Amino acid sequence: MDSQLLFSAIWVPFIFGSSLALIPSKVGSKAYKWISLAGCLWPFLVAWYLFFQFEDGLQGGYQFEFLQSTGLDSLGIYLHLGLNGISLPLFILAATVGLAAIFYALHSHADRIQLYLSLLLIMLSGLMGTFSSIDLFFFYFFHEFALIPSFIMIMIWGGVARYAIALEMTIYLTLGALLSLVGLIALYQQSGADTFSMLALSNALAERPLTETIESNIFALLFFGLGILVSLFPFHSWAPKGYAAAPSSAAMLHAGVLKKFGLYGLLQIAIPLLPMGAFAWSPWLITLGLCNIVIIGLVTMAQKDLKQMISYSSVMHMGYAFLGLATFSVLGAGGVLLLLVAHGLSVALLFMLSTSIYKRFATFDMSEMGGLGKIAPNLSVFFVLAIMASIGLPGFANFLGEFVIFAAIAEHESLRWVLFVSALGIMISAIYGLRSIGNVVFGTPVKCNSEEEVELNDMKMFEKLPALLLLGSLMIIGIFPKLFSDKANRDLMHLYGDQEMVLEEISRSDENQNLND
Image (cartoon, rainbow, N blue to C red; front, side, top):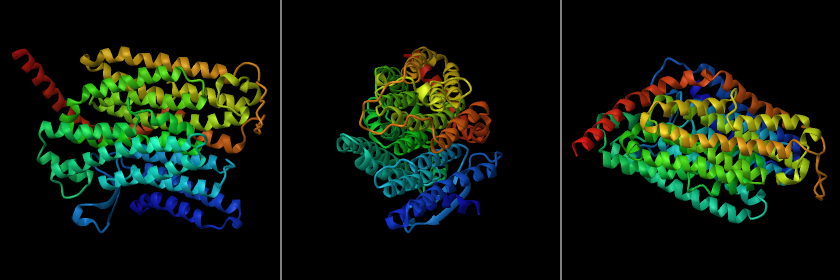
């Protein structure tokens, strides 16, 4: 029964989204709004039901497994779904952000709203499938499936230069996807496994480990392929442009959830299955992660456009996750998982609030804003809290994610220098975050000379509810991190516990070799 519910979290939003495109427009807006609401509410309810049904005592396996033949059995491809302690938080993240994004979109007054909501639901379907797939083929397939609506929405509702931006995104993400696909196929072929299942791959590699050279080559493909999808420096330029051009709900889903695909792939698949290859590429993990924090952070400070600032800050904070992965420890992996959930919630909230602020000023230029606290006090409070969460204020989930990663780095004597460089990111975040609050919230209300209709009132209920959902989730996880960490710890120990000892032996043998030389 629970396995069927897990499958329904994928097909229900897809069926409802597809049906929206077929409903005649004369049926009326209320019909397709109720359909959209039902389509995004069902995965949310299923995700939390499965959360409470999840058994903490099981180690190293998946629960709620759903296995179905696809007609490609001879190739080892099955529709194999399930959740473990690592995928469960991201599955809930996708459902939560999806509910907030689609509920906000119901009142967006966008042209062709029926198609807009349909694409959002189809995108949500792909996201739910991505984080519940055990089979690597469908893990990759659902990600690509969720990308298609994202491109379409930018092409239709992306504003100025939308075609050029969509083309740039297509080039970058296609390159990343192809490298990832080659890496996943190479991993399957070299492992000797019978299927693309992560469990089968893990068992096959445990019986017949790969050589360090093969692991290094496969990990390089996955690292750079998935890294491009995460906007790893210097392959990041597509992300700020794409998020700034995308309609708000699409940006919420892409930046908040879909971008976690790459880091989730490294966390759940690449590093546990290819530990020697990951260790060989660890200097690049650290170097490029620091570039995301420092270089992109400085670029974020220079932004005057509110949505561009949020977009660049989203790219910047992914650098901390790469540093956490580079520790190859249970503690570091746990910090990365917590940060992924926290970042997804906070950046989705900021993109939503930025559009609400735009409606009050008819511009994203922060130099032309001011006095939001007098115009919309509730919106101002939400914006200040969202910025504080994003820059890592204690009490929010972002703080715990970054703190755990810093603690994991401090445990490695050879990596402690990284702490001093990455600490620059905290100062940079505080500068651009507090400056944005000063420009937007305080001062004298600016008179809008734009011909666009502006709202000179506070938040409406359709803005408050999704904002409360996202902000409340950040605060609950920030205060009660065991909500997810207890369920993830056993799987992290299973994947990273033995790996720590193996990598320590490799490091020790390298040191002895250097002494002998």
